[in-house]
Length: 350
Image (cartoon, rainbow, N blue to C red; front, side, top):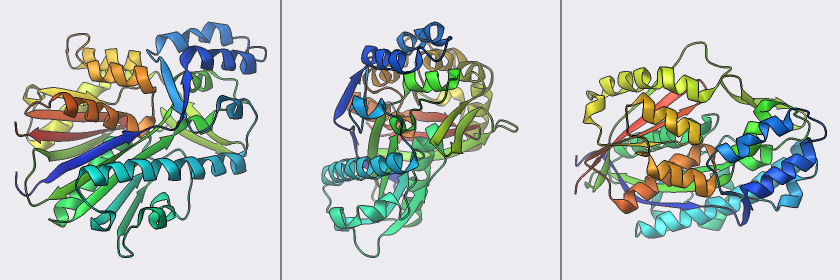
């Protein structure tokens, strides 16, 4: 696959503040318990996610005070810029490149608004060339890691020999709400953390791990399943259907359709690398694809150590899978607002 886009390097990173799941539960109980009679019933969610700890761009005390758009945005810009620089530098160094060797930057983020966009804000700090191509992508949610890899690979393949830097960065904790007394808000509080991943891709000179094919599947009439609602306080999470149930019913047919477009079938896949929304979602994926329970071990490890970092999470799983050895063909999958499944088939030469 000489002319396919290859994974040259990758890196992941998290902000400095670590929160244990029990600590988050107690903070949520303090803030919401007296206002929301259903809180104690829903508090079991914190134990059922499979999460042990998560990371945030601000200390715990910051989240315990009411915040509006200006404060959330300032926290987003500061935290996102620092995390962007961290993972980008690591990925570029691991590729044996200089920052000036980067020709295109793809930035994926759905948890904050920045104009100018993040790659422009850090251009001076990192030292990007003045003619670097910028491709910011917003609104893909949890599907953004896989969809972003797909976009970056096509850009690399369109210009063989050029270096494409993909940065997927999500600061989900900044959307925490005190005024949202809903099950969706409790679910979000029990799941989400902050993190970022960066990948360098290049086409034209071969590579051990190549992007074999990409595809997406958009289900009609599913806009209300997942997304953001924007109001004066900030983003408000939308979860209007149970994701594990949707996965169990619809994911295999959707992925089968994507694979068919690639000229592949489920049996051609040696390893699934999935976005782990939580323990119940992981179990639903294993059942949907008739995998033995526990097959998605990297997914369980990442969700336990980092929580759900939206789009970045699947790239943490990919990093772990690469470190432990990829099979001949793996399929990255993620689900996100739309409601959409994004897939990338990886071909690995031993």
